[in-house]
Amino acid sequence: MPPSEPTLSGIYTITECENCLVVEKGKRIDSYITCHSSDATSANITVGGKSANALMFTTGRFRPTLYTATEEDHMVAVTCSVGNNDVETVLTTTKTLYVAGRSNYDMVRFQSSTICKYHQSFANH
Image 1 (cartoon, rainbow, N blue to C red):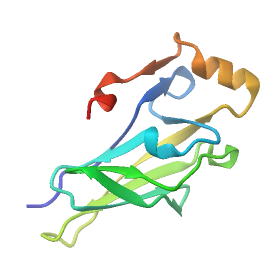
Image 2: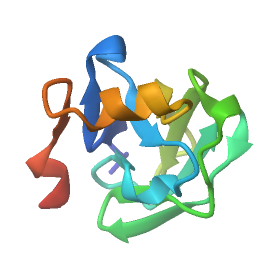
Image 3: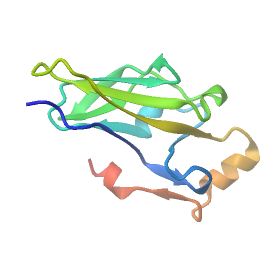
Image 4: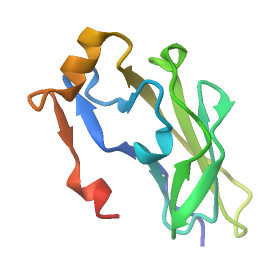
């Protein structure tokens, strides 16, 4: 059975970039971002074209590993490509990365509960 179309999701949103994946500058991104595709057995996650070494943490769910967000990563593309042994076709999705904490002012806005919210559904998976 082929994998489903992959989706990228994160634990935070920010009003300045509503459909972006939000991470904190200087932090490893594995606790912020996940890629999901049912029936996928492998994934490749890139940040601005650089490999983020995807690791499956539960069936069909992958996290990027060994990648720390930098200021240069702000507004670059995050891409997740998935596949399995049943098909040769690779399915891909892309979202933009918003790096919070590029300045003291930005970090205050990021931590504000009025513009940044925690997605409980991500934490429960």
